[in-house]
Length: 273
Image (tube, rainbow, N blue to C red):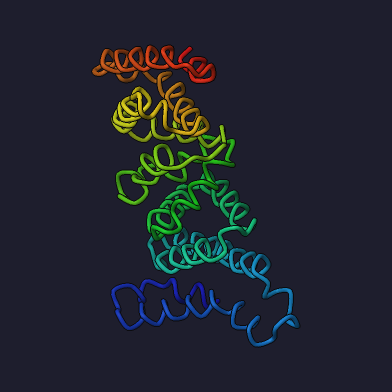
């Protein structure tokens, strides 16, 4: 029950208690490495990275369930989620390849559609994640969730409440990353369109400007260019909701198409079609 105790609101605003919380988290995260260094190969399987991450995340999910129940029953926030967000951030950063992260996010997305208290609690957790964990969580959530309504419940308003999340969802993943995952692209476009259509407008214009340039067409690896093209095709479907700049978008799109048609590469010409 230490996770529940450290989530009590009395820990908020107290620098000494926050420092103690951070030290406790660091000790938890570093424990497998310390055990491995001391015991060499002869140590319990529970301290192996994947198993340890899974056990921590299971305890976190149980803690969230209990806190949501208590806060809902008392109709006030007796417990908060700062500790949980910090711990999840550390787990994502130190055990980023663990399959348990994917499973935990799946559970959270399912819980997000249960009650208002679940929705608000999970949004608070996501909003307070540290920057190093946000991209990992975003890729797992948007790359694996087939129920779009779960994503809306889980992340609604997050681009307005968190600069870090806004950067990851509208810059890092679409423009600065290549992930060969059509579901992630589809979910991300759907979410941004529902989150704030002006964000979709800005992203589409920025992508079209990149997509249409001769240097990007000729110098960017085909896979990355194809990745950007997929985003553009899906976003163009939301043109009826972009009435004010629809003409500018069409102009940039047609210019880009012409640039692709003039390429000597058959695959690039095909993208223009």
